[in-house]
Image 1 (cartoon, protein in one colour):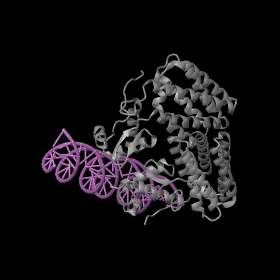
Image 2 (tube, rainbow over the protein chains, first blue to last red):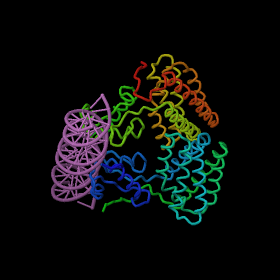
Image 3 (tube, rainbow over the protein chains, first blue to last red):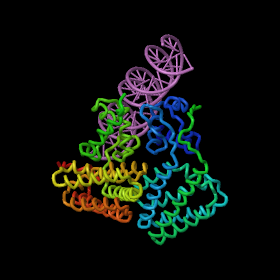
Image 4 (cartoon, rainbow over the protein chains, first blue to last red):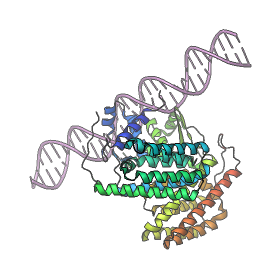
Length: 229
Length: 229
DNA sequence: ATGCTAATTTTGGTATACCAAAAACGGTTG
DNA sequence: CAACCGTTTTTGGTATACCAAAATTAGCAT
């Protein structure tokens, strides 16, 4: 019937809940409870869980309830390192492959980001930020890279969101974005590469900082129970 | 019931069929036919298909039978580029993080590869080759990287196998592996990085060569042949 | 023949029923 | 009170049944 399959919709919904924190890290996702709560059968819910598992947002355990991923700081840092590498590669490829239309779009988005930087709330601003990076990667014209990068973006949504919510160095971010745009326009691979990697390094520092500050060894959160309405 | 779920077993079996060419690229995988043929129900088969889809070996289409992926030369090249980048990153991280035990294991495997290079058949030799690269990546101690790299290894199994079956530059491969081992031992990031990337560049060339030789229009139904024994 | 439409079949998507393994529970016994 | 063991409950895994799109085919009118 639908363009979008039930399992995908459920996956979207669950992903949203996980990323926004409504579904706490470590929470159990029992097939029966959740499917009943959402008024669907176990089959599509099950499939949705697999989707999220392949994205790294949910952990599957043999013969045991799936659980919302609760990545350690080390795991997040590992993800960031890989993502950094992918994005750097994407930017370098984009220098070669970006079309004029894409360049215009990137430029326009950057301009928009400059305009709204004072007024936009965290979520809106962050969405634009994400889109900026996604556009650059898309300009690489390497489908595999785009997919894999998108997967890491999804997995790192929450940490990145927290980092972006610290308004503190929005100025630096915007400046670096500007440098990246300039590098792309002039096809300056070295500049773009350096800026992307510097950009990421700051992100790693910020996120590390946030998690240190929270000082939580939330490796073992107390038994979480979850009931769907 | 078992440690290994039915769906996973089916996925393994299907993957094997796909990689060995028993299931031709472009072939339809109908849920009913395949599940009946294997004497299992549609449910686990369905799940197996999703697993393979997430690995890029099978393409899902809305309301249409899944089909065995038939990657174009361009797509394979794209995959190789990403894999190259991941492997390079892995090697660089391994320079910092590799343990003595891991170093010994890598060294031993390289020695073994040298020993059997004259006598081993294509499959055995290739398995050792794959394992060598996997070990290096594992020494990065970055789990995300290891997983993602493994996914690309799986996706590129067949093209790489074809390339490795050309015995022609086994000598160069062994020499480069030796250089990588040496670089790891001396923690020479620049050397390791350069060698890995050169290694990969040759691989890209070889694979490109193979696919060019086969004539390109395999965009349609797949030309089936060859099993290098 | 040709183009169109209506019945039919095929297909993937979803719901439900069933099973066996694993926890959770409870009572008994030292 | 604690440790053990049998029973019940809960859980994920699998099989089967059902449904509605979509593709295919059959028939018809031109």
